[in-house]
Amino acid sequence: MFMDIVCIDGRYMSRADAAVSPFSPALKYGLSLFETVLTSGSCPYFIEAHFARLKESSDFMEMNMTATLGEIVSLSSGLLMRNESPASARLRISLLETGSPHGDWSTPSGKSVLALELQAFEPPDSAAFERGASAAASVRGAMRDSIRSRRKTGNFLENLAERRRALRMGCGEAVLLSAGGAALEGTAANLFMVAGRAIITAPLSSGVLPGITRAQILSARRLAGAGTEEREFMLDELHAADEAFFTNSLQGVMPLTLLDGRKIGSGRPGPVSRAAADFLAGLKRRYLESFRAPA
Image (cartoon, rainbow, N blue to C red; front, top):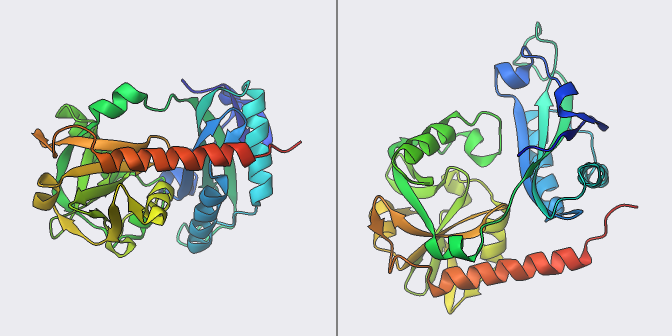
């Protein structure tokens, strides 16, 4: 359920009153960026990392994001308060290019809108973790050298197409493949494989999203006796893995227990997946304890 109060360029209003021209570059050409942040009460988890990624993408696309980290934290806090600070929610921060619809779309307009919205969200419970996720491998190699694969943009067509195909097959996710058949990531999550004493994820040079939770898991270096490693792995390696799991900012760590109708490992969350989830839970707990909402 989407919450009624939104924030557009610093102004709070009802969702029904918010509008962007259908002729804006954001809608005509996908010139938009976004971040999705898990919140708890008044706390947007790891907002600094989300801001840094949004700012880097904005600078790269010359989209002129002028808001500072402090301003976005303040706007987020105000939005949460006006929506009665739900126990947990999905905060989406979008930067939409709104230059003249009659101008040259290939030239940066220097005009953009910062939009914040909230959606009710309940993180997966222990039962969902124990079930794990099911996924279907992509039927085609993705263009992972694309700048879109490294940034969270409104041009989400490829990921949506693969996610919808997976849903039609009764799966909750898709594993995107490179042109050479390497298993890279999910449509909305990074992917880790556990083989022996190695926790492996594709390197950023493969074109995968520089996920915030991905970086946090890699920072652990060792989990349940296994060390982290960045390299590409093929789909058949993933099928033969001891464990696998997805990571993103909303779900955290979600074991991948079924791929293309076949169990991965025992078909249950393994010790590394559990250790990764515990490690992330600890990071969130310490962040929540240290976070101070703007007065």
